[in-house]
Image (tube, rainbow, N blue to C red; front, side):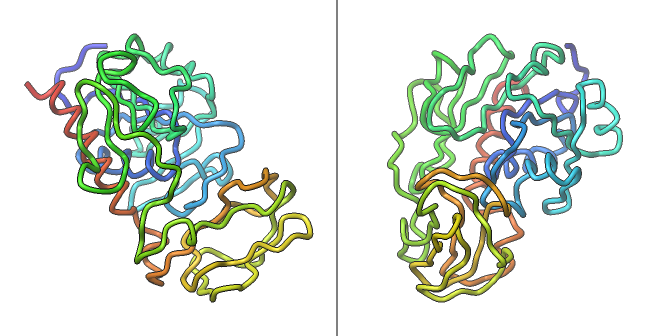
Length: 270
């Protein structure tokens, strides 16, 4: 697929969760408008108010002024692009890549392992976080671990390994994450943005309560009536208590989005 201007690049994003959405928004606001995102049939985002994958459930989602819209087939991508929207398609096998032949493929699933992404998918293939090796299965890898190297563009080798621990916010790491106490159906009467106290019950998995470990605000929470497995991450308490953080892209997602933008410019802005 030939282009006359770098802004015409077609960019495919695997996944449409929080980090994928932050990346897509960064690119879109940098005038890369021909983006499409591929998701599973029933995505389960925690930070739902900043995740384009919610369009799979709700048809349309807006994050910081950028609109994502669910489409049914790749033929619908152009209509969405003409309307300055990011099309989201249910395509867990990434068949759209073979049909569209994008210039850039970004694996933003954050699975902590490679689920099949390879160098042959596009002239520029980018992986986010652990599970990828630059020069082997992707061209470039973005460092996603919080700290000094967050957002670093890796041209050869691997990013830092998965620590298994959530990032530190106001001195809290694993304490701020809500996990399913057992397998079952999650239900909650609370909405994202609710202030909570330590030991509050925020919902139930079947009949077992989900209890907070710290004071803060419900920054993220999966949808009601979702089937969850034991210990699955189902919510996020932010000890800073700022309501606006629930609906805005995090500093981590912005940094990663910026590094992806850098990677694309390294390849195509010559």
